[in-house]
Image 1 (tube, rainbow, N blue to C red):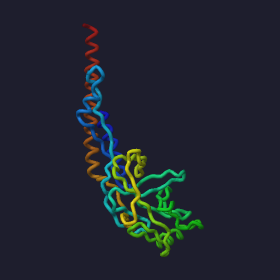
Image 2 (image 1 turned 135 degrees about the vertical axis):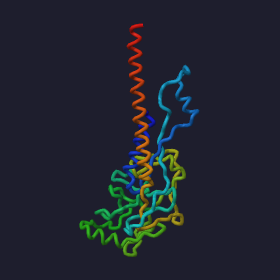
Image 3 (image 1 turned 90 degrees about the horizontal axis):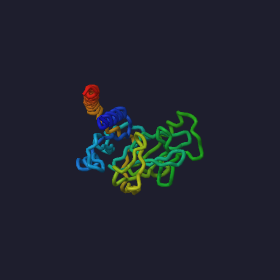
Image 4 (image 1 turned 90 degrees about the vertical axis):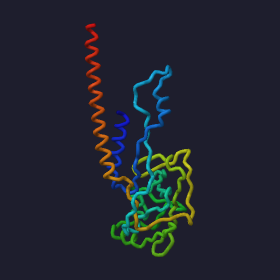
Length: 249
């Protein structure tokens, strides 16, 4: 039941993020049979009645690329590469979500305010100015050019270069929210060089969730969960009857 409930929750969360740019779907898997059998035995070797050990993992397969022609929409062609962003407290995260915007202080930022990091720090187009007017923001953004190698230009002046991070073993990353990841101790990561960077301006990478597939999975899991709940209820009723009968023996 615990396994089915976890699968149900994961499928529901995937479905809710089917339209989240850069989202990577999660999956549930049961550990190998030998390890499961070992975990199902206590020290005396008596089988315990518990669910098989399960865990979740993130599927880092590409999402579909979509052309938007928005100059601040960016997609990474490198398979295991990520944008590096930073919050107000200086915490850094990895993400594939490239739907950036121009903040009021001139920074290239994610929708939640995390700032895109370049090879020399935070990417800021207007270090000496504050953008108060939305129309001015749009005008500035329309004059931004990002090359395939990640160089950022404003009115043909080089502002900096987007610093991508490549992770050799992305399965070790910790998902801290829907689109953000943090490396663990065992994560092997490095900065991509100029020649290795491949970025598409005016494109986004959509979620890699298949909505129809997740919906079918969700319906099947819900049906199995309901059947399991009924079986448990029947077993409980049978146990109660056995206990009552035992009192008269």
